[in-house]
Image (cartoon, rainbow, N blue to C red; front, side, top):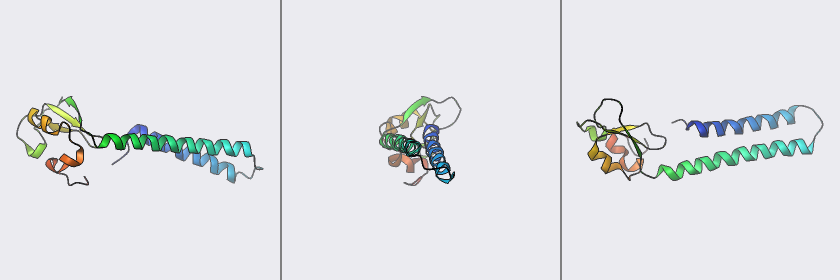
Length: 125
């Protein structure tokens, strides 16, 4: 699954900083310690920012979902429940799942790995 947009942008900044450093090294210009150190600092800053964002995402991944009222018609996706879905349950890095009132209460404080099988996914999905 793809990164959320803000993490993807942070990853892109790592590549941009790396490319700027490589361009400086390969430019053939005389070595300039001040310029090179600034480029290295930019790369380190981009890497640190990316790692902080991923760490925050990992901390929230083991918590229960957030809920929003369902705006589309459909049935509950929890074990193919036939009830009308009233909410979209949202876990990090997982597409929203439609749930009825009963199953909202069931999944409320559960992490995605704890309930993924009930939505038809194995523990890795």
